[in-house]
Length: 134
Picture 1: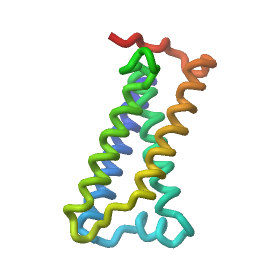
Picture 2: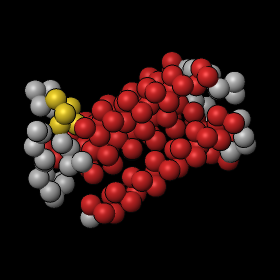
Picture 3: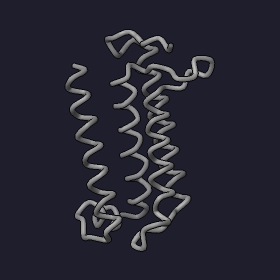
Picture 4: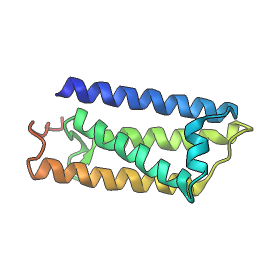
């Protein structure tokens, strides 16, 4: 099962990098065009794509905590750092613009899906044990 989760997670990361590359170049993209055709579609997309990536990363890392006193999952931290770097890097691309609302949508997705993952682990819906932090 973990191999399947890793595969899905890697596929989503590749998809995200592809979307980012297209957006950085200002190239046409069916997914970006579709999200722009929906009211707040871009923000909804940010919420779900980074939220789902967070959930998958936390499942792959078995909800391992990086700050044991705060129980912050490693996957959530990694996705948060990636999102922050990616959003801030947009100031260097003429076809992009830094949007604080995108960053808020990303953060809300990460937070919501972290809570969903914690619920799944705490209620035992995920079949493997939570990894201990070192």
